[in-house]
Image (cartoon, rainbow, N blue to C red):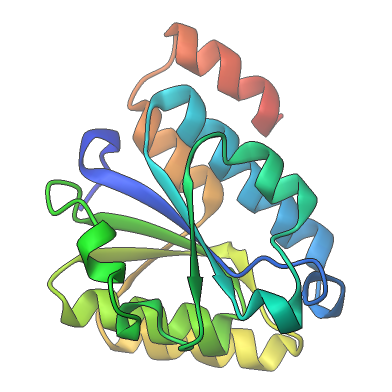
Length: 179
């Protein structure tokens, strides 16, 4: 299954100011998330972000918030966004491919992704765009998700599949972000 821009959306899970510094390889994870967000904006792929218990963990990271444009921030208390009242109604059933990135891989990303899968969506987790405080937790989460039937991709895979071909104005704009 290729990731099609007309059939997908980007979900950024809980990339929050107070949590981000604790995430292993946080600069790399944030960089990949920002690449996905900039690419989604350029290609017209809808985005939504979640914010877990912001009164305790703080708001979304400034860099992430700055790339959202008018995209919605869905505030939640459940680890799985899909367990939160009203979340599934926000999903566009015509865009079943949900590209998932964020933190923490073994908690909110894992539980939200499994919820998306159970809801009949086709989630794709971005391996280099998710992080946990402990690298081993991230690895176990990716293995568990793969074993559950979730597609795992890298940020560049997503961007190149959204692009489909070289030589377009979009390609010319986005290749500078990748190099």
